[in-house]
Length: 229
Image (tube, rainbow, N blue to C red; front, side, top):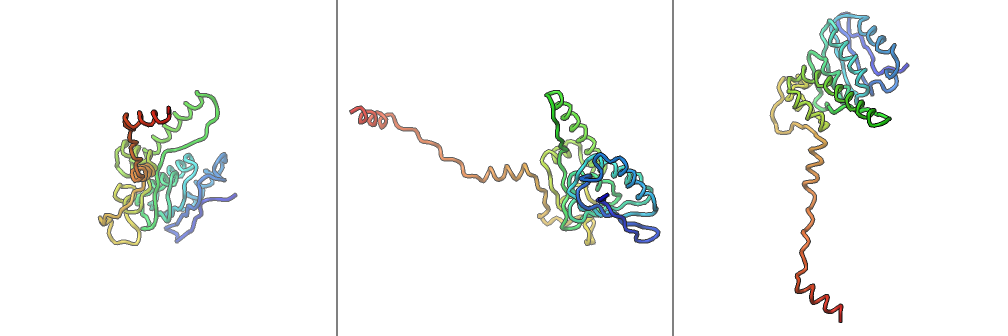
């Protein structure tokens, strides 16, 4: 069975967990034993753990289970975002007492999605489920960042990508790796990418069509006169 996690024992007092690749793409979905296996591996040792994340996300319910296990773990949990913590992986990242991001890493949050088949009532039920899942995700973001639920909802609506400086600025992360300062320096270069904002920006740069000028009545009369003769 392929796992998307790997444990490395640093010493008797600390361990490192690597979360790489899509979450639940093959092993979590429909496999009830896998969360149990992860929990067994988590609790087989004690002491502080460091979790390196490089994942585009995956199944939100699997991510919720990992988040809960890490939140309940008795040792200190430090999250380090290696390259990408997107979608469901960003939820797991919120379980860290300290969340560090590489200066070249990215964090992405967006609305949950699903596939539904059926009549209009089934579509409404799917929407209701997605709305509740979104609220549960906001719970994790709110606990870590301290941002308002309205602000977080808007960031998710826009599918927001954050580099390390912006993530620290908004409270999703605590520190940038390989730097001495906890607070990011304001260089004016922190990035928060919003698909909606980029789309609107591109639309604003498109040349506007020239207004069509009407044909003077006199000119139109002359043309009709020539045609009739």
